[in-house]
Length: 418
Picture 1: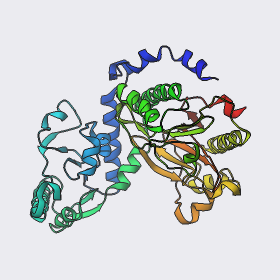
Picture 2: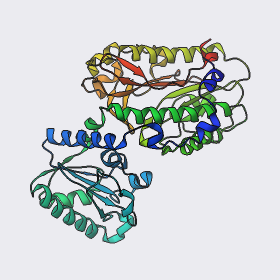
Picture 3: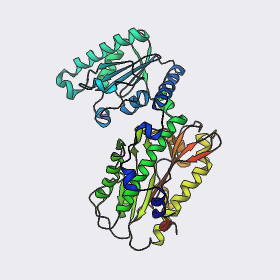
Picture 4: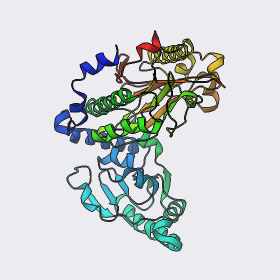
């Protein structure tokens, strides 16, 4: 399939780029989505005998309630907005002046003003502010779940956590129940995932159409970002777009470099898109005007081989260890620059599980089971250590009861596969 064929099947791109992606348009029951997610979270709490969770990661607050507010700001300034979840009650502590933002969300029982316990907010009075935060929270916890209950806590500054512990609260890490809850998606939730992917694919198509020698990496990346925001996506979590020699090694973010003729351009979308769901696929392109070189085509076809082999072995019931053993054997000349993961979970961001390469499993890997309802991103980076260029490819899939379903539909490059 060529880009022109794909464009023709997508209707008018200008119309798509301005499409109102309201819940009614997408026919998504967001009340059901929110109810499923909160129930998943509470089930994981009960499984671990955790009476309450205090969440400050804005992605996890959105998962539990559907509410959003200054996602990047509140991730950096914790705790300035946080959520208390018990088995039967949720209290959202909202940032100053933002109490009204949670109106109408059936997942939020009460909204209270947050007490921001950070040095920026309190200055030299930070310790006193942390003690005040802990006292207020401890009193609420005592009222709702008892004085000695086990409470899951995430992303608090050390002083706040220590002060809360001093009140006799038994603190544990909140990551396990949250990540395990997020790992399995409902059918209604998958409609959100697909909406995010379709919007991101439109954005990548617009970016691909703008690609030409003489444009800078930043200018090209900005086309993607603009289109994501125009379609009601949230933000791009990274700026992983590079060209030419900057494609090797991987993880160089977009910069002012001018893209030259006949170069490879590599992209990892990392888009927190429609309804807050992560759209995560990677593609590599060729700037033209000549045909790709044999070396460029070899890199591309090798990366695609890795992705397609690893997608083919994924099935429900397969253990993480068995996946690592069966995964594609990376040729020695590409091994040093391999992507750090073979595959990873994907929901509102990258998430549990991480599936490691065979060579890395002993040191970094952990076991578990691939389950229906997981959405996974299968990764490949192919570039020789000290080589001139590299190729990044990645596909997003859903694990079904019988196998897998491809979610990311953006086409591969015919010219690089010839």
